[in-house]
Length: 442
Image (cartoon, rainbow, N blue to C red):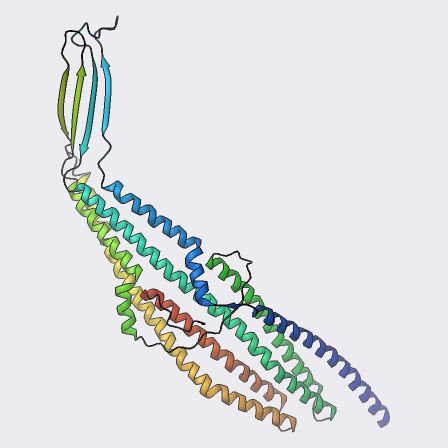
């Protein structure tokens, strides 16, 4: 009976080893695929500065904004120009029975030209208002440039992080192989159970699953980056160059001060306030009449002399209570709206800069914590756990837990690195700073 049990046990171990060999072959194949994927992706380096230059050159949204600015500049000379002159010609005949030109005093050809002249100061105000509107659009274009740079940088850093996480998971897959070998050795010697081996295999497959999900995320990020830059969505992209950590020396007060001075969004709203103020002045000018001068010539024939006339026409703002006065009220309300919008933008920018600045400093503290404390400690815990597991002093669950902590510590470090760079990109865009203060890959 004992010999039969022993034979059954040997056959069971043999079958199980064959199953494990098959599983290991699948894992090796998937791991090789991951390595090939990584090697192909890193064939061409993807540099942030080149992407930024390309985005500023090819972005359809930015090109459309530049066209709007160009169109607004063409409106300035139109605003300061006089209305088109009017030319009139006609004929006056006496009676219905025959053409009496030259035979009758009242028969004549008539020609006249007229020009309307707005009240002094109106054209200058219209030109000023068009100029302020154009300047506001130009500053909005600058704000769009900064937001575009911010968007490219954020996607670039997310793409880098996805590649980095794949590298980290691949590096740690060898540690799972060590646990698997130890579990097989313990199982063969009767010190461990089959569950421990299956646990190691399960963790290995879960690691591969995470890598596959990250590769899908890379494809999505590449599509977004291509769209933002102005490329075809399926255009090939290389692997992002690893950013370099640079200490950020600006203080919160410095950034808020720079935002108030340089932010295109604030400057755009300031131009809008100036345009609204000019509109109020123009609306008040509408209380004053415009003048139309008309010169006419009446051409006669025969013994009759030609005639001419010169007239001036003045419009009377008779309905000023329901027209001009209401236009002034409307313009004043628009001015108040523009001022409140300017104040709201300032408050929003200062709040957002403060929030992102806090993210930067928090990320820096966490990175230091991970690098100097958690990562070394997690590595030591894992080494101790795997050593204890080999000798039978530590359970498999403890080894897996320590390995997960070891993997996650480094992943968390790079996650905070990327969050720091993205926060810098955001508040630099809000502060109107074009220089890269973060860790651009060189």
